[in-house]
Length: 136
Image (cartoon, rainbow, N blue to C red; front, side, top):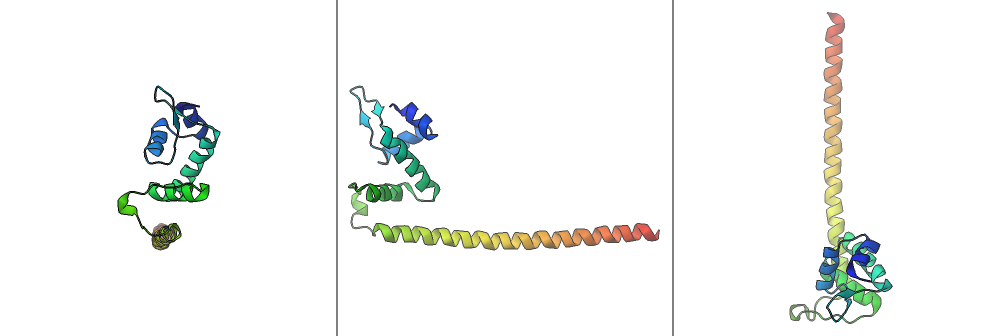
């Protein structure tokens, strides 16, 4: 299938599929006229890529996770040679997500308290206005 059909089947854009290809997340065959050609396995691969990215992983980690899951070799740039093992990178990513969640929970708690405080003040004002109108 050509790139437009893959985009339609996966609910993504042609531009995003080209981006995945550029970063080594997809490896389409090429026709003599340089068109990208995909097969059914690429449909699942794109879905996996999208799921991993929506989980908060960056493209580099997605490439490593997919290679590990599919038993593929990954060519790392020289500046990444001898890098931290995949499990450690994923653990760091998980820790980072957990820290962001904790920060969001604190923000939520503060906002909930603020909403409660404002509701109390508004209720007091309404009661004061109602009380003042009843005595007049």
